[in-house]
Amino acid sequence: MKRFWQWALILGAVGLTFLGWPQLSHADSVGYTVNAVLPKNQDDSSATYFALRVKPKQHEKLTVAITNQTKKSQRFQVNVNQAVTNDNGVIDYSQTNPQLDSSLKVSIKDVFGAKKVPTVTVPAKQTKDVSVHLTMPAKRINGMILGGINVRKLGKDADKSSKGVSLTNSFAYVIGVRLREAAVDVAPNLNLLSVEAGQRNSLNQVNAKLQNPEPGIMSNLKIKTQVTKLNSSKILLQNTKGNLAMAPNSHFTYSLPWGNTQLKAGQYTMTLDATAKGGYHWHFVRNFTVTQQQLKQFANRYNQPQAPSYFWWFLAGGLIILLLLAIIGFLLWKNHRDKDQTSRDTSEPTDKQK
Image (cartoon, rainbow, N blue to C red; front, side, top):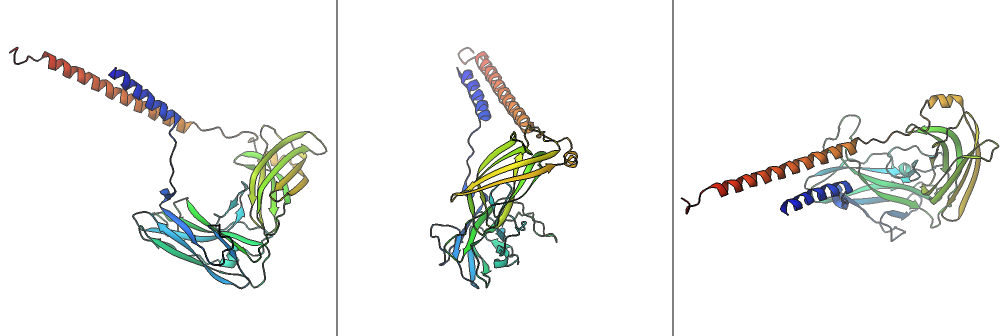
């Protein structure tokens, strides 16, 4: 019975290894926290970011509190970044020098200045306030200016060369900054700037460059696209994506993968329908051309997704097998040793036998 439970324990452990335990994550696992010290001109009391009502020529200091939860002194880099829209249709505050849209009149750098905030050192188990200063332009702004205060911990092996400090920790806290001079938000708009064939990660796709030229956030954006041959109703490609968003005065590239369809050189039509929160709807029809030269540039990568790598699965399986063999070997050795010990104990004469 004892050996039965030993084997059951082994098989149970192996089974749980394959099934996988849920992994727990903690908010303090990165070793620091960042919180906004909200000023009096906060116009949204429920927000934990800077949602401020400002005036022309206004000067203001914004402060964030960095708490170092570790037992060692840590260094942090603080940047104020422009909010843009990345190609996943997500508002992105992490880019230090993003490509700005041509419709953007006043950027976050214009308000906070391009001067870099010095590296901040926070002692172990302490909190330090860090401030950045803004100056609103003299001319009244329409809509909002959107950005974020980005706080990133510097690695202990940071490079201090002329290229600057290297960031070895990919995690960063972002405290949003929304600046408005009026309570009413400007309605967003959507423009289709271009449509063309392209590639991403060796996969062929049709790229539609979309722009929100207004200083207002576009949320709950849903996009439906179809591609047909020019003057044909037969749908060759189609897809739908929802829950997207666009930052004010920004653009991004919406991608429609070719999938299992190989487009040939010729003329095509994309039909794009989009809806957004607030009852907004846009409809576009745009012709585009796939050239033979493009097909040559794409080489033979059409519809050939990179094969999934099973290396880590094989490695994990090999390690599990080795661990299993080691446990079995140990139990067999222990069982053999116990038998030998029992055999010696029974073979030795007792005092009475002597």
